[in-house]
Image 1: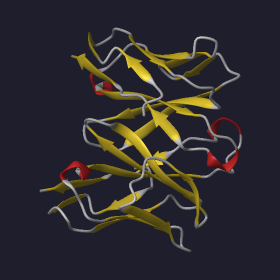
Image 2 (image 1 turned 60 degrees about the vertical axis):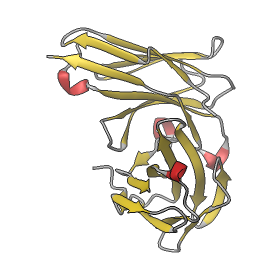
Image 3 (image 1 turned 45 degrees about the vertical axis):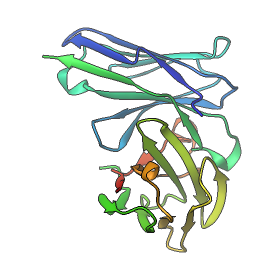
Length: 114
Length: 117
C-alpha cells in the first residue's frame, strides 16, 4: 500500500519557473526522502529530512516537513529542462538497522518546457 | 552512476517460468533492498537483507525469494511467473552505519525490466 500521496500527479511549467510538489503520509516517520526518476531509469536520491527537522535546502531544492499535518513539500527553484522527471516522496517509518524500508508515493511527473 | 549494478537489464520470458535477477551493491554497503515498480502498484518494497541476513519483508509473494551472499551481492528469484509480474525490479543498497544526514539514503541500480508473455 502507498503511504505517501503526492500532489499534483503531473506538473507542466516553463524553464525558469519554480515547481512545487506536495506529499502527504499516514503514519509516524523517522525521515522523509525525495527521489527523482528519469523515464525508465533508476531512482536518484535528492534530499532527506528527519522528523525533527522542518526545512532543508540543497542547491535549488527546498524541502519542508510538517509532522503535525503529516505532509512535506519539495520546491525546485529556477527549473531547467533537465529537471524533467518523476519525483517521488518516500517515508521511512522503521527504526534501527531497518532503515531503507521505504514507502513511496505515486509520484509527480514534472515537465519543464524550454 | 550509483555504483549499484543490476543484471540483466531486460528479460522477456513466458508464464510459468523462473528467472533470477542479480544485484551487486555499492562497495562497502551492507544492506540490499529489492523494490518492484509497476504501473498499477507503483514502487513496492519487497525485501531487505543486511550482511547476509534477511532484515525486513514487504509485499513479496511466496513465489519470490531472495538471498544475499557472503560477497554481499544479492539475487531475487521469481518463479511460476504470471503476466502480472511484469515490472521493473530495482535493487538498492545503503550503509546503515552512515552518520548524520546520510543515514537512510538509498542508492538504486538501473533496474531489471521483466516482461512476462
